[in-house]
Image 1: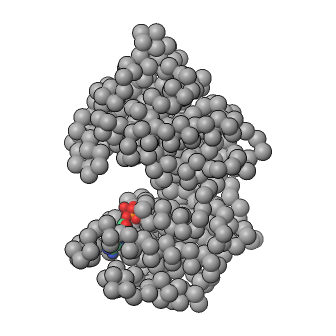
Image 2: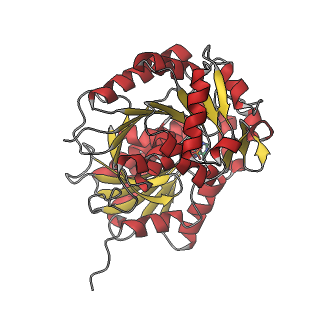
Image 3: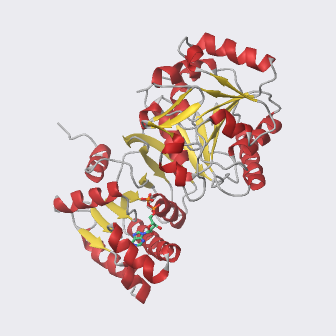
Length: 428
Ligand code: ADP
């Protein structure tokens, strides 16, 4: 086994996959792990992304978990480290971006790093230190009223400065547009003035490529997933060199959907309109105690293998509200997640080798039920959603292919496109 180059720590699960996906696109071979692995890494890859669940936990816990992840990555030989947070800089004045960055800098003994959530392909741009979500400032976007991390100030220098005792500065667009050398010089100048963290402006992928080059010798990067677009070029890899190759897909195809987002409702409707076999989970029956796991698996069993099957709790907002009114949103979510994750495991046990899960929380529950602790990241299906390959004690020896889609990702035909991408080319 070779040693890894880049060690990444992500503060949530789907964010980790998003980051891994961008590294693979740039030509790096990547494994994502769920939490800090116990033993050494048994895979020959260029980067590892450790997915934590540390975005909104107490700052001291987030810092401790991140440092533990850092030590594991160091033991695998990583020389550069990437702390990944959300491209909307989700945090409160108490953290966790500042405190985790401080803890990782202390642990590494470094005195300078960048902070850049820009991801222009997804509408996140930074100009003069102000973060835009699409066409509006962050504080004018939906993030203003986020239940856990409301973002009411778009000036990231100010936001980060509230979270750290280190001095925060800015490499602004007038420098970034002049390229990697200019960025490097400005960072050195700010460092000389006692600045230890810099927000970096970026408006498009060309800016991220220039920034990537300028970061080649920096031991620590903190960023959204966008900055990862510019890093693979420093490691002598290029896109299209087979980094996204996974073992060939085998086994039946199945979809489990617990997302009620607009995009997922459209994807479920599209699959059904094409005549795809589908089984609906009625949460009201689950609440009454009906064994829908067995019903769904009995329905799916004889159908597995012929064509993809869909089992879904996905519903329109009115139906979701009606369920939540009965037992509360949290309990409703828990009951549905428990049923869907048991169904996902049952499907894999019955031979499903290609599984799509729709819904961020739902995906987390399914991965846990499958006892998957690491995944190799493969080709991108839609921005932010790659096919992955994992071993599971419930799967056949060749493992299982997983596509874990958070709610609003993917076009209407996502399910059909995803399976088409995995099919081996037709023999001549
Ligand atoms: P998304 O990525 O779209 O936010 P998640 O899986 O993260 O999807 O969240 C959806 C939540 O809604 C889950 O907890 C899921 O169990 C729950 N849920 C799914 N279907 C229903 C339904 N019909 N009624 C109420 N809650 C539901």
